[in-house]
Length: 354
Image 1 (tube, rainbow, N blue to C red):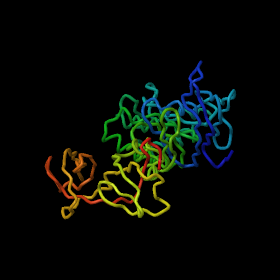
Image 2 (cartoon, rainbow, N blue to C red):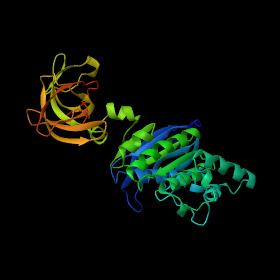
Image 3 (cartoon, rainbow, N blue to C red):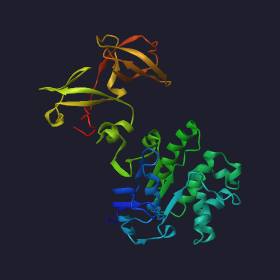
Image 4 (tube, rainbow, N blue to C red):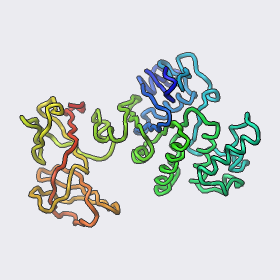
C-alpha cells in the first residue's frame, strides 16, 4: 500500500453483527494527504458504518483499510482505535465539562511534556480564533465555539486522519455555513486529511475536495464536487446531487432533440440509445425576454441574489431556472427562456447512463 496516501480502502465489506447482510459492500477509494473528503448519501446508506470501520470500531468481513501505508483493518485483524492515530469529532462534540478549553485541547497530549502541551494548545487556540477563551469551560461557549474546540482537540496529536460525524447538524443554517468554511480553512492550514459524513450536499460542496455518494451500502461515485454535478455516472447520483429534471429526448444525426430544441453533440458524447432521458439543471436555463421559447412561472423561491423558478412548458413538463432577483415575475406569468446546455447528460429509461 502507498505510504504517500492518508487512506486507502480496498474491496471493503462490513456486515451487520450476527448476520450475512452487508451494511457496506465493495467499497474502494483513496484519499491523498491534505485532502478533505465527504461521504454523502440518504439516511441508512451506510456512510456512518463506513466511518466507524475507518475509526476501528467495526471489523470488516472482507477487504482492507490502510492508513499511511500501514494495514489497519483486515478480516480477523483490526488495529484498535487508540492505535490508529485517527482523530474523531462527534456530532455532540463530547467535550469534557470539568476541563477548560485549553485543557480539553491538551487532553490527547498526555505523553508530551507540559511545555510541549501548552505550546501545541496555544498554537491551536490561535488557529481556531479562541485564544482569549482558553480559560473558559464548555458550558460558557456557543455551539460554534464548542465545535471549533472539539476540532482543535482532535487536531492536537497531529493524527493521520480526522473523521467528522455530522459535526454541523445541531447548528443553525447561518452558523453552519460560516463554520463549514472555517473548518475547511483550519484543516487546510494543518495540511490535515479528513472525512466528513453528512446528508447535506451543500455542506459537502463547501467542505470537500472529494465526495463519495453512497446508496444502499455501495459507493455510487467518488470524485470532485464538479464532476459529480456535471458528470454523474448514474441516475441516482444525478438525482441526488443538485437540482434538475429529466426530459425525454431522441437521438438525431447531429445530436439530440427534445422539447427545448435541438442540441449538437460531438460523436464521442453522443448517446448510445435512440431514446433516453436528458438531465436539465437550473443553470442550463437562461432567462431571455427576447426568446420565442416561453414557459409559465408556476412556483418561485426567493434566494436574495436570485429566484429559483419552477417553469411549466407547453407540454405540461416542468423545469427549473435560476434567474437574477431583479427579474421578479408573477406566478402564472409567461417568460422567455433559452437553453445553454454545456454538459449533455443522458440516461436510459431504466436509470442507467446512456
